[in-house]
Length: 211
Image (cartoon, rainbow, N blue to C red; front, side, top):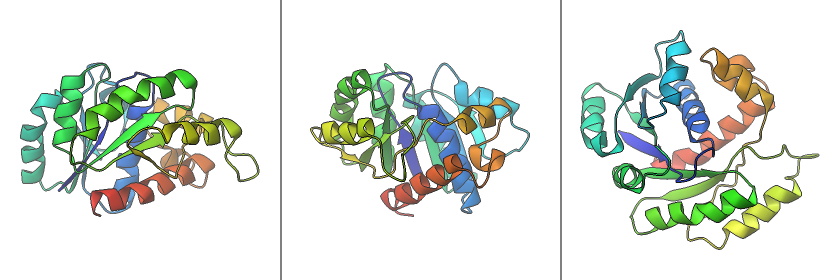
C-alpha cells in the first residue's frame, strides 16, 4: 500500500481539490483508494457526502492518527491512501509526511503563495520522502505554452530544495462545476482540458509512489 500526502502550510492552495481528483483518477487507473481528510474544515468529507458513488472511500481524523488509519486501510485491502492535510499545522503536516511514500506541495503561482512555500519545503526537506511542488490554479496555457506568470513561478521555485512537477493544473470552471454535486472533472467532462491535466498529473505522480 502506498500513501500520498498533500501538504501546504498556507491555506487556499487547492490541496483538497487536487487530492479529490487524484483519488478519482487513481480509481480509474484500477487502484483501490482511501481518501483521508485530516483538515478540520472537512472539505473533502463534505464533497464525499454529496457524492452518490461509494468510491473512493473516505475517513476523517487527525494527522497524528495517520499510522493507525493506514493500518486499518491496509487491513481493508486498499492499495493507495491519499491524505488531505490541514494548513497552519506543522505538527500534523510533519506527522503525515513522515508516514508517506510521497508528498505533493500545491501552490498558486501568485507571489504571496510563492513567498509562503518556504515553510512547507523546510518542513519536508529533512525527511527521506520524495516531495514535489505542483503549480495549481494557474492561468490556462496559451497556444500550448505556459503563461509568463507560470514560467516565472517555476523559475522562482528553483530556489527551494524541492523539485517542481512538470505538470501545472489550470484554474478552470469545470473544477467548480464538478465538485458541486460530488463529482470529479473526469466524470463531469471526460474529454475536457481539466480532466486531461489531472490525468497528466496522476501519470507524473505515479513514479514518485513507485506505482
